[in-house]
Length: 144
Image (cartoon, rainbow, N blue to C red; front, side):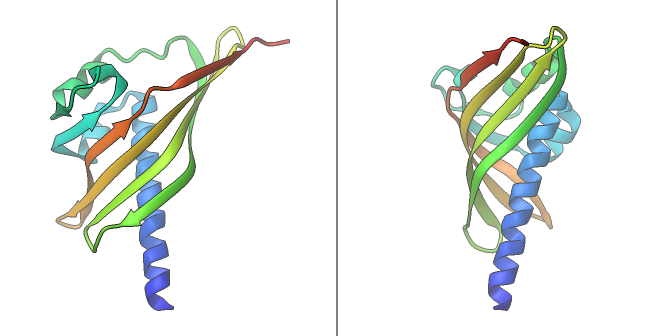
């Protein structure tokens, strides 16, 4: 019973830290984002056009050029997160990421991405070491 509680607690921690990471991305906060990432982070994402990206420079470019795109509000949600504990110091999480925005004109849009992330615990703190994000879909709704 205690082991189940500990596993559940660790899984909740992975979900929570992943949500924090996504919130830092939405806010354009590279300093906080980079504290959660291993400096040799690897990634497959649509912006890399099929290439494996290594390190933080590629990601920093997008933070440095982050603009709110005229959004009045942004909300990022993890849908159906599934955490796999890979021992005491590693975990993976897979989920659908929904990004909801409302622009200044009242146009509401939602983007959807399939994502997976691998976390490694080093010196008592979790760091993102790899992620994969698949191309997203976009819906918009004009105010009535």
